[in-house]
Length: 234
Ligand code: ADP
Ligand code: MG
Image (cartoon, rainbow, N blue to C red; front, side, top):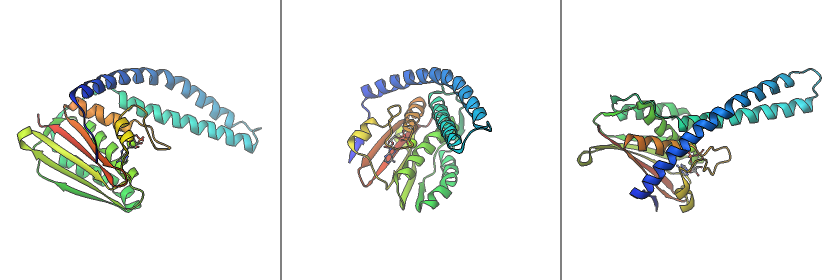
């Protein structure tokens, strides 16, 4: 079993890196978005010209869909980089889990993936529920993507009383990760997926970091992956 555990030093470097990457990304995204919108607009205009042959139509369509893909990536990048406009409230993490599971039920069913929850009663945490939701959604998405067909995603919650923290684990029976992937996970743009952005786990690490919590990952190639998140209670 390979484990992704952060030493304090590594944690500090990561958090500093996240901040810099975030600032850089927010700036770049702004500069890229406007010209991209102009290009897409003109492409759509050209595509609708009457004299275009079928072949050319196809090329224009391809260009436009590639531009849309870039737009998608930079939007996700902006979400990743966005400073946390935090609206903290008291809430029960179990309620969020319930919502999120419901949200993923149909996509899980489609792949014959079973989602099992094992949730214990928790004290409320004072955090931004939208941020926590973002973390859970990114992780569940990764777990579902890691399971080809059939599989079980087990979500558990616990209150660790002596540490005053809530622990949430997501365990999949998917493809697992080798050591290299586990070391690189969370690095901006690191992805092993053809249509991946490599931004999901970066977002998770940043948010958990800001909450003063922790995110650890254990994985075994061919067997599955477990994500362990802790969130401080106040
Ligand atoms: P993306 O999903 O766009 O590739 P992420 O940052 O969410 O970007 O994940 C980065 C990489 O980490 C993935 O491409 C994959 O290789 C690996 N990974 C993440 N979650 C899992 C998981 N549950 N099982 C196996 N590999 C995973
Ligand atoms: Mg992902």
